[in-house]
Length: 266
Image (cartoon, rainbow, N blue to C red; front, side, top):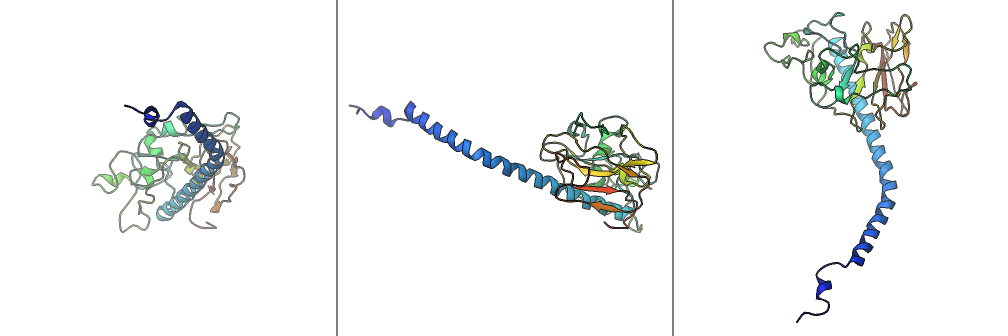
């Protein structure tokens, strides 16, 4: 014969379940306001660390080859003004086309980046993928790397050359914590490079070479800043709050401008 308590011993009653659920919801309401700022802080810290990694990587490449990774041609050997026409590099996942992960512009910007505009992006978008220049030697994105027998059209790796590709310079930098690529404005870093087209350029001037993440809202809110052209002094500036002219919503930790050689204050 079953006891009167046998049904209760088989599981929780509805009242008990409601009580437990109320406790869980109370704990969530207390923990979420504390956890979210910590998560955001961790995301910002990672973005700033990634940007500094990109800075070191670009400077190392520039020291080795005397130019920034801006080749936008079937033949990147030797590097010259005619093939150094890439306007920006995107740091994300893989080695292919990253257009779907490029950050859009804030509609309120006057000098917009327009990264997906055919004027600004390579006819072979994988050439804008930074990993093809820095993680492996395949700047023309033909999947034949510099270490292969037919790789002579990539950055020069000849051991006897003083200026040669000595990478890989970077193991991996994925998209930023909010799912967009980091952007390096390499076209503006090259002394005679071709920067991203801006809405209202001024004669004999060109934008500065920002390295940035669009930040938590995923919108580029840093307007393209104008520097006198040409800028011949190497310069790098950064601060915890970001460099001058950077929107607080963009996690831009660094600006490289006019770097034609590793002289000056880097």
